[in-house]
Image 1 (cartoon, rainbow, N blue to C red):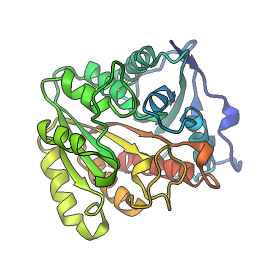
Image 2 (image 1 turned 30 degrees about the vertical axis):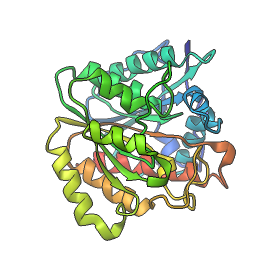
Image 3 (image 1 turned 90 degrees about the vertical axis):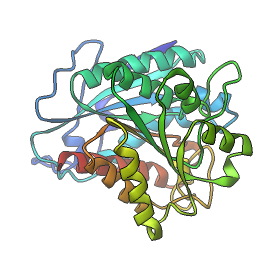
Length: 317
């Protein structure tokens, strides 16, 4: 099963002012059980929490990511607000996984994402495990049934494992590939040590584009930019997924699968800006924060800043 709950304003905290100088003063929380999300008339962002770790548990990862959405919100609340008055930021609450029913949670999440996109908001989903990717893609597909949707994933892992009876946080993009005639997938930051030979074979069979972590650096921006442009030109819309375990553990220790050889925030921001500037990005998520293993909330703070920059880039187009 899946359950829904409104986000408490108490989670959004920070310095107070009479001029909305801080992000928590700009965010509006609504209860989808009682309020209808109105159609966006200006520049609007929605924030949805996917408080689910069942997929990580099934994938034998370190559990703890179910608490991530609210921790990210807390880190976002104190950030300075430089957005224009006509930019709306609406928090529409959390989806929780009940009784380990990942499949119903994913279906429920897809429906909510579809509803948000139908109201013309740019959607940002806070994970939770990367099993969110399956739900997120299907919500976009329901909104754009005839469009070619390209997936760009900043990640150490392909997440192309074959489901063993049920899906998990390592299977979402394989599930998408097998259920759709057109599978367009670009993965940036792939670590050879974190993906076995079968996963590389699967990636080749599915014609997946990827750049390894050794090349996903600021020294290789020409190659990265060319790869991004070539990929984006082949799709109608882009869905961006950011897995925090793709970052070096120096920046992101609070994840289920940390690695010292991950990529840096600099190349991630460079890439995100390029994607946003394409005008094809329709929805984004950030996944795999595990607050139980974070240090001084530095991984949660990284997640908050990445979301801030996505909204900044989109709102200034």
